[in-house]
Image (tube, rainbow, N blue to C red; front, side):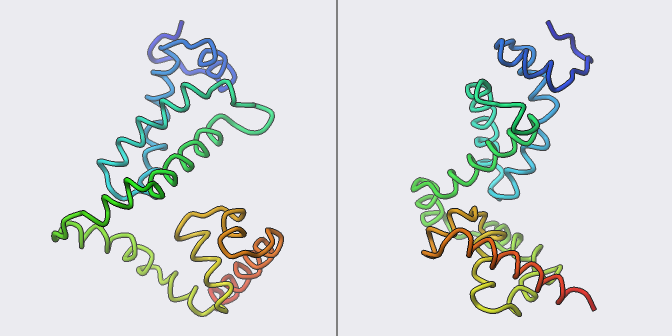
Length: 181
């Protein structure tokens, strides 16, 4: 049984979670919810919806903990993947798309919509990306600004996965050269 204030190794925590110990889940939530919430907010700017997704993510972690395989990576990495997938599924859902279309256009909507682009524009990243060839610009946009995986980009654009990987790598090399004076 876990006692409050104790620190557990990742292996111990996983064992306790797989044994369905509620105190282990509480420990997990207390120690990881902040980081998980930050990942969600980076994909879903709506704080209310992000809170809902946070709860959903921890339910998924609880239910799917048996699918975690320590030989494939760390617990935190697995949890981040669960988080990222749940967040992307949420913003791609029809309910989310409809809610965005039907949302009242108030000042706060304009402010929140501008905040994401503003942060990217403050560091000038979009301007740098627009200096790339069109094929590279599109790939960077899909991968880094919209959160698609390389496999998803391959399907969207109808090009082989290897080509996507090569072009993204080339685009990043070119961006690096543009950034360096």
